[in-house]
Length: 177
Image 1: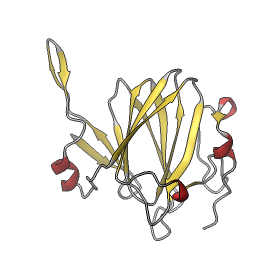
Image 2: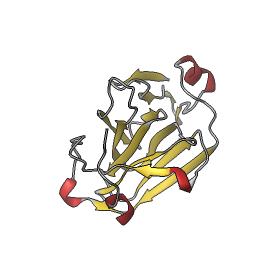
Image 3: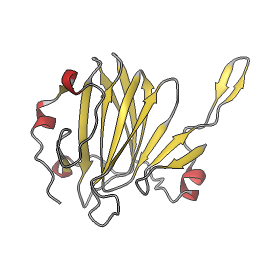
């Protein structure tokens, strides 16, 4: 597995190393030892799938607040997404900065998102599925988020005018540092 740290400390793009043969290929998508060697949390307690019918669907920017903060590993198992991680850690040199990565069923990339960062994505294709591995159980009382279009962050989305967004995601307030 190839781990590439982004400009945001602790956010990694992970590419599995494909071992091809006449049948197709084999690749590891998770290895506790390799994740640990990069200082990443490995106690996965819950996995989720998000199905998105329409191209342009936008989910985010979500996080789980203390005391149940979570790290997560995100991959796209069908279709493709524009995946965004936003650093909300107040003591971080990159607080309020974001990075984006295209994840797809054909590039097999994953993104590791540490505690204290918000996550969101916009689908680039119809019928897209996103797979999440979480280090904390879901606690509805601690779910939170910031607006996907908050001017404090200036996130560049691929299809802002065609975004399908839940009512919940449009209700988040703007960020106050």
